Amino acid sequence: MLLSALPVISASSGLDCNILIEALNSGGVNLLKETLTAITCRFMQVQKSYRDALGSWTTSQAQALTADASCNVGGVLRIDTIDYQIMQMESYSKLSGREFLRRVYLNHAKLR
Image (cartoon, rainbow, N blue to C red; front, side, top):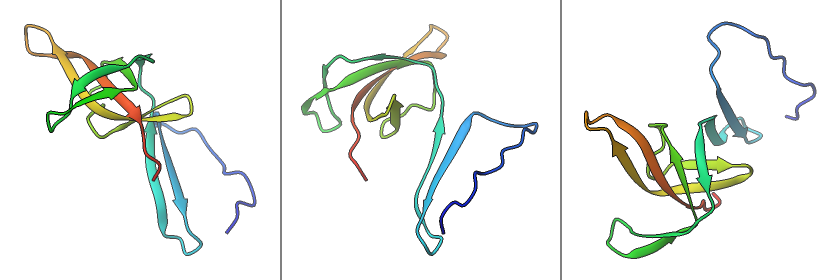
């Protein structure tokens, strides 16, 4: 089924800043479902060598600094139109133990 008219969007209370994207086949079965959430981060197009979970050295293609706790290893950050997979993460905490910053190491995400 093709989109014959633009969807109607009406303002209501309780809106959040998440965008749900779904791709369906002709039978209505989900082919892809993802939720986009805007976060604040400092993106740096720099390479950094680090040890992966198996102890091998590898190089990231970029880094980002963020205070968003939803950024975890295996997640994806979309910067402009490029998807980056989070390969490693370092968290920084205050003396109280409260986390205040995450540095994530990024590589280009593989196409599904």
